Image (tube, rainbow, N blue to C red):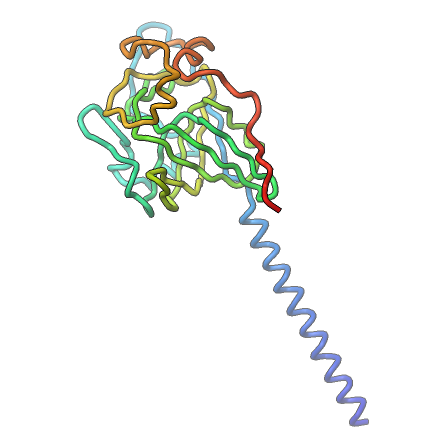
Amino acid sequence: MAKWMLSREFAIKILMSMMFCMVFVGANVAVAQVAKKPTPVEHAKPLPRPKGYLATIAYPPTEMEKSFFEKLSEKERVPGSWEEDYSITGKTGTYVGWFGIVREIKELESQAKTELLIEMKYFDGLTDEHIMAVSFNGAGDFKAILSGTDLGIEHLSLVKVYGFIKNEVKSVPEIEADYVLHWDWGTFTFMMAYGKQKGNTKWRKLNKVPLERIYSAFPDKKYYEDRLGQRQKEPSRPKEEQ
């Protein structure tokens, strides 16, 4: 009888241990699934064309964007202007919302993430009422890390990336993206070239037009190609080390 009770107690302990392991593993799987949830990417829609005069307005965050916009400090809501210099370096740990042109897209499928190399563009808080408008000048390149792949972000499109600056390597900050707003060709333009130009000369050399002609209220494909270069059709999918 005693031997049977010991066996029964031993079996119960084993069963409880197995249940604990199942709960522990299940919890970790759930956490992993949450961690791998794709970064939200909102794709801007074309705005109505003006019926009369062109108008300038204060930047209106979208409904989806508002909660992220409200996390920005007052200083970070205007990343670059006519009057004040703005730097993207030395800000590790800061929550930012930066505009920029997507120069490189790398999809790391085994890690379920996307890396963007972005040419930052200044923004003084004002835009055209009918189209998103940023400066042609900027403060340099930065990287954005997004969860997921096939997120619909196009090469040479305009994005606004929200998130904390995770680190900085060789003066290139890296943002762990919380949310990205994406403007494809036809939905954004360059409002002059204000702010001190500190961007990558590699990208600047692709521009074919004088800076005084950088703006267009109704940009077409040629507008973007003359200022940004030729578009890549597919994102880079580099071979990853095993």
